[in-house]
Each structure stands twice: as structure tokens, then as C-alpha cells.
Image (cartoon, rainbow over all chains, first blue to last red; front, side, top):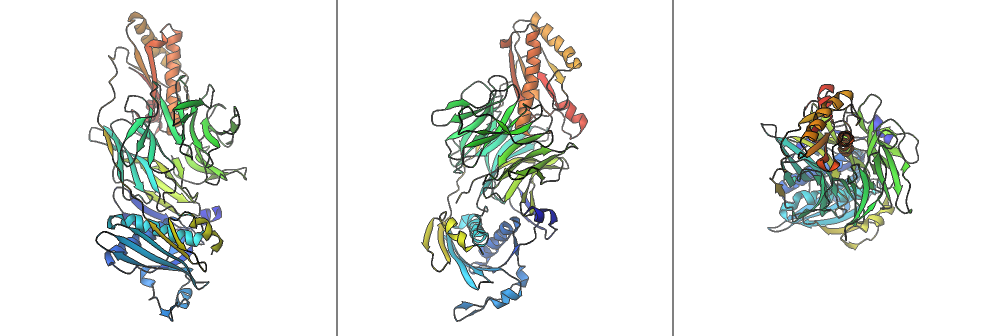
Length: 428
Length: 157
């Protein structure tokens, strides 16, 4: 996979603008599945829209090459059997067809996937919703296609959190906690404040978010329900509280508390708000994140004299922190890959640049995955195939992403600075 | 490709009608996505009279005081000894390099360095509030050494 990543050439460039973020797909990988997507039958306007969204969903994964619409052939069916030979000649691996059934109050999509090499239908699915859910219907369909072909769960129907800072003419900032679909569309404001907001984190069920707001004059962690907007401070303590991370079972938050004047990691049981202290060290301890199984946490500590990544095994009584990063003098904000095969983190190179890096457990070296100057806040997609992170280009902060198979994309904002993306878990 | 995995992800689908002759057949409804936004307009409580205003600066990645900053802090501790009623807020800041949470913690260490100096010079701990804004409130907006050196600071208010 990584070999492809390095070798990947500029295969296509396509841009599409939706809402506030601007999706720019800049690079694909080699060894892609070649797919012909026949525009779905039915309402032409809906079909066009679906086609655009789905194409981008699949191209963004880096694993698909979608046949240009002008090159499509008519689908021939003889004796109830699809004629595969035309598609084989075009070099296609799969063919996707579908129909749209639109009524006043419903919008249903039926789609079928055909394996050109094995000459048979591999999937027949129906997704149903209402007309204003067209984007979601498209993402569900993309995920169905992705899963059917790769055998891996798709992430088109997941969502992103991020922070947007907008300065007015007097340079006064408004900070917004934003929610959007995985392609940057369908953007919604969850919180708007005149004080900084940092460190957004998803609850595993995707219904609530935790974040740090400075609205009271110091850092405090809040939990907010997305649908109702209901929010509360997680602790009433008069101390700075920061860096929330939700346990995979949704029952705990790991946090950084500053009650001794120094950053230490605690685990908060949400049911009764009991706190358990996890670190006790003169140096900084912060940026805790849970392992996918919920039995370990990673965190950043300055105990060796520079920020490095450590791991705590929560199954042990009084666990000892084990250092897991060794290369360079700055490694921070780590998170696990979903299968725990490795960790993704921020690494400072010897020339002082910050990049996103990956270290596999089985390897004794790190892989630098990005190339700007100040790359930060990596967040791994729930299927482990993509990472979204923050970059700074010409003094403008925006989001960028890459797939481990080599695709790259950018999500610049039309307004202000965008940073600190957080990828949700699977939502379907 | 990957027929064997079909069964694995069929579990995640909402309704599975049938799965015969390895054609995967599924039906699912998209979920509801309502969102309610919240707006906070109230500014944080303003800090009190700026009798002890001072700014001290720090080296990259460091939280220890320099000779120059100790000079500035002497004035603050003298003032606090003369006016026993003053309490001060010590706000630590970091430049934009590095992660936000680590910078928040680094800003706090800088604030604590200043507090330790004042305590060592006879100021009572309960007259000091320390806090950090990390890299969230830069004084200077550029991405260069000059801007960064202005942003690695503690503000005393």
C-alpha cells in the first residue's frame, strides 16, 4: 500500500464546490478497481446529483477509477443476462446500474453491482429515504459499492467535526464548532462563540460531541448533544480541563486536568462523574486517546525532556507508561489505527517541520506521510484507510486528507481558518 | 473479489432480505440527521484593574524564565508587596508550532514559572490565578521567528 503511496502519479484532478468547504481531489493511486457507473434511471436531475456525489466518494478513497461518462456504452441484456464482453473490452472490473424511485415524500434507490470478470451479479441493494436526504442516500450507495468491491466498510456516510475561526474587519474572532459530511458538504454549526474552541471529539454513537471551550475564561470540557443542542460542562471543578477523548463503549471520557497546576491525565466515568487519576508526573501529560478495544490509552508526555508518545495498559493495576515513540524530538497527538496495527501522530523533523507520521507495530521505523510545513491534528477514518489533518498554506489553515492507498484531497474553507478535524465512527 | 467478506459486513446492514447464490441483497433506510446549533455571545469575565500589567517572553519549547523576564517580574512582585489587595491573573501562551493541547500545557507551565517566581519572592499563592490559552490567542499573526517570539509569552493582568 505504502509503495503505491510513494509511486502514485497525478492521475486526475477534479473539483466540486458544496457549501462552505471546497473539495479538491488532487491525486489517485495505482492498482485501482475500474468501475463503470451507468447513470441511474429515473429522475434525471436526481440521477446527475447522485452520480456526482458517488463518483467523488469513490475517487476520494484512492482505490477506484471511474470510467468517464462519455465512454460509457449502452447496457445490453440478452435473455435476461447482462452482456459482459463490452465491459471487459473497456478494461472494467465492475459495472454499477441503478434506478431512482421518486415520490412526493420518498426517494428510493435500487442498485446492482456486476463483476465483469466472474460474469455475475454480486449485489442488489435498496436504500430508502426522503427527497432532502439525497446526499445521504448517495453516500449509503457509495459505501455499498465500496464494501461490495473491496470487502472493507466504506466511510462516505461518516461525518467530520472541525473548528472554523472567522475574523471580522477589526480582527475579532468568532470560533465555530462545525459538523459536515465526510466530503465536506452539508455543513452545520454546532456552536458559535467569541472565545476559542479546541479539541473536538465524537461520542462513539455519533450523537454527541465533546470539546474544549474557553467561554468561561479558561479551558473547560463540554458535552453537547447534536440533535438538541443541549450541552453541559463535564465537571464543575474550578480548574482548567482539556483534551477530551471518548472511550469506545461511550461510558468514559479521558481528560487532561490542571488541578495541580500541571497537565495530568484522568479518566472520568460519565455515569457518576468519578475521576481516576492516570498520570502523576512533574512533566506535561496530555492528548490521551483510547485504543479501539478500550483497554489502552496513548498520550503525549514531556517526561523525557521532549514531547513523546506513551501507552498505558488499563487492564493492569497501576499501569506503567510505556514509551512508544523514539525518532526525533517531537512526537505528539497520537491515535491508534482501528486494528491497532499502528499509530498515527504529529512528528517534527530535524529541520523543524511538522508532519503526519505513521508507525506500524511490526516495524522499527516511522513513515512520514505528509509534506507541508505545519501539518497537525491527524484523525483516522473508522475503516483505517484514510487520515484527515490540518495544514497551513499561504498563512491559511485548511483541512487535507490522504488515503493509505495514495489518494490526496483538500478541503479549504470559503471563509476563515479551518482546523482540528475529527472523524466520526461508522454511522450506519 | 472478496466474496468471503460479504457475510462479515452483512451484519452491519439494517435489513437483510436474503443472501442466495452469493448475490448480496440488502435494504436500508438512511438515518435522521437533525442538528441544533448553539451560540454563545457573552464574553468571558473581564480581568480586573491592570495595575500589574506585564509581559514576559520565553524561548522555543521552554518554560524557564530568562534574565530579562526576571527583570520585568521584579516590578510586579514589588507592586504586589506594596498593594496587598491586588490579585493577578497570569496567562500563559505558546507559538503556533506543535500540537494545540501540548501548547496549552506548555502555556500553563510558563504561567506556573511566573507564579513560582512571585511566590519565591514573597507573594502569596492565593493572590495568583494561573491559566493558559496555549496557541489560541497569538499577539502577532505571522508564521515567522519574529511573530513566534512575540507569541511565546506570559501576560500578567
